Image (cartoon, rainbow, N blue to C red):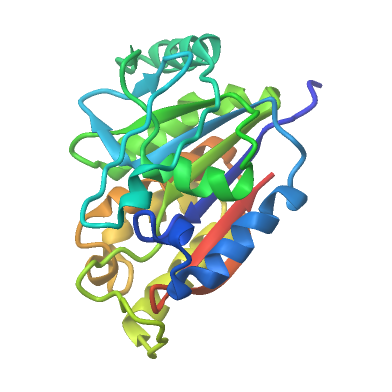
Length: 266
């Protein structure tokens, strides 16, 4: 039996560049991410499914030296000076496309696009040396939950490689409800959704039941309050289906005044 080497994470990556700018509402998240590599074995490559990239078909970043994409606005000048000079991995990008196409999913490589903040913010905290090749995988327009579960299933063979797969999103993403000051207010609606997500991801469910619950996530308590638009949740679906096992809860704290979580499979 082939040894399983892959590692899979989903985490909440915070608000734009604020984690890198010393924002007090991100202290717990920054500390967690800086310590996270100590909980992992060092990967040979990293694949990030970012909430901030949507394409008609699953699309993989294929440049050898990806540029930066500053996909935020209204921040201090230094927010547009961050660089993450990790190399890409075109060969891995090709293998991912082949796995998706083998499952009859149209897929493509984009050799022009660069790293968005869903990738470079957490990786500057986790691996600031930028010495591990990194590629990025898009979400699929329409944001259908079942489609993203299918993407994850198609990529399960990546677990035979020493690859770290990261779902970079936010388990709470209602922009109107965040606290932009350092504060923590009781939010029973968010608590109910986070507790549901933790139970589905880490509880003793059969894999097919877990998949069914994630496919119908909108039925969860206060789902649309926590995710008026689901792009920050769906990286979790890709990761859960790819790992096909229960997760461990590795972060449960506050970011921008709202409770948010991170999960680790394998």
